[in-house]
Length: 111
Length: 113
Image (cartoon, rainbow over all chains, first blue to last red; front, side, top):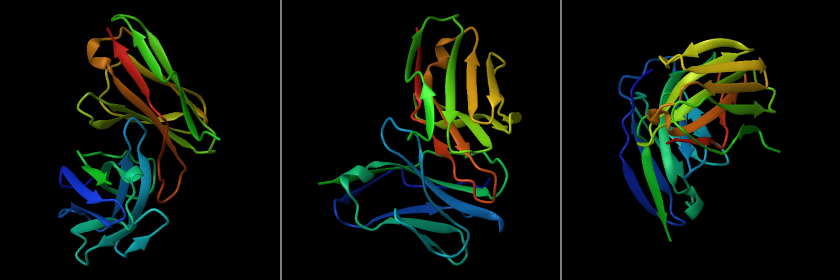
């Protein structure tokens, strides 16, 4: 699985959009970008995934650059409950694939 | 409705003891996992079972033995507990398929004294 690089921490004001970057310059053509988050003392939670097109669901949007070497997770209107560690994971789809977690980005939403 | 549940939530025990952590999922998934999160907050895969068959075993000491009595359950038994086993253990499950999003349980905090 390709390695990812994320900033260790970020701050965002409540109600504003939180943009979390992720670099994955060695991503292969068959690898997807997944985002999970872990709110304090809870199990990780799936957010979104994508291959090359931008994706949006009820939680977030995922913007993947055309060369697929980086992506941005966007939480459009951050709330205090979005304070968590966000993990960007790159892996192939299919099968029982393990998730390889890096250090992630600790996002703090400030009132 | 709890999708992935673990028992116990907290487990405090002495070195050398044997203990088990239980995991159950009611999502009808075929694959279940155990992850370990250490004191530095690194999350690492330990095992994965698909339809009761072991498919991932990530260089875990053989004191750790997963057991899957059926598709909905994956238990973790740990023999001769050591101080370094203190961590939070997460169970997860996913369905077979292309994207297989993983659903995690609430975790079991194991403290070995």
